[in-house]
Image (cartoon, rainbow, N blue to C red; front, side, top):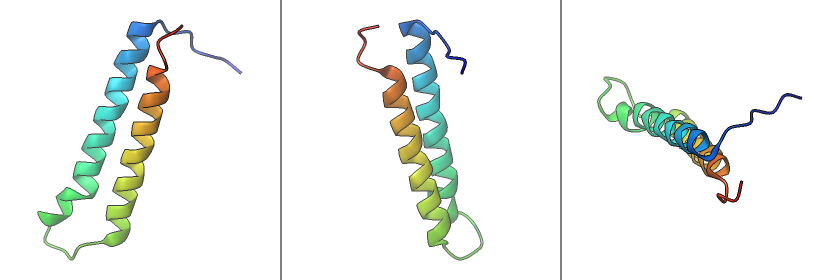
Length: 68
């Protein structure tokens, strides 16, 4: 298995961008439904929240504890 060896600055940048992607996805899947011309979908809203939480977890894991 190949492991990426990023320095702290690179890890922080990737973690920030993953979190940004989660925010955009949640905005599109959850809040974007209020602007659409169709009924609210609870499944799509839950998928947006799950994706946002997943991106948050990945972002926190990438940030690490800063000891590396």
